[in-house]
Image (cartoon, rainbow, N blue to C red; front, top):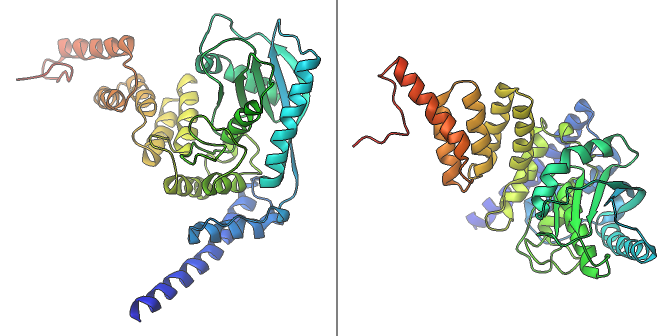
Length: 362
């Protein structure tokens, strides 16, 4: 009897908290002028919050959402000819993608322009090609009428599809001219990452970590896409909004594939990396430390944090983060490691009492 009463009280408190939570979201969104939450869709968001607290598999009725059309810039390689077969297949694939996104999230993807781009033909790995061209492609999108880009690589290359979390850049490899339904699943999957969706272990989910074959959604993918469906693909609009970042992370912590990285950590690490490139080391460190609080086992975050410490001559911190980076699976950067070793050796020449952590004492 006592347990039932406590359970009812607990559920009522959660329900009240959900209403308070939506009020906070609306207030902060209005105050910060962030447009990924639309005031006309408060009931949809509230329903999603209630679903989150209930941990049920029920789906929000998408009818309360306003239809969203997302403009896409299609990029293809110089030398690639968009012939009738290509055009017809692209049209068919987008019809399949839009049927799924429209019924699930009331989103439609619309190609508004197509243009050629010189992709490096010497790179045979899609991930490396993406890393090389991502920033340039993002700038092209920002200077166009499109909101996101879809790059098509028509040659044999290692990898099928890739997108940066919360970015505006998607890249897929397809040497068969998009002639398969699986191509629709691949593109839809990569589009999902733009909203922060992570890989799942649900075999019927389009965000399955590997080998997704169906345009269907699981509860966790459904929740993150509906939460972020109005996101404008500009990380700067959400990176300082702890309310939304914490909610994304809570959804992630409830359901994610093994070894899948928290999307908030990805967002913060990407931003920290850009600050490192711009030599704003102190601000980069703040974001990277914050990233580690969301997900502390990502070697990439630890490695870039180490390099920021190095630039500020915080060598002990630099060494600590470097060893953690390697421990958590980051590939050792021998060139950087030798630079760090040399720093300690040079300091010891000035002050022999300084400890060199690279030298193990018996």
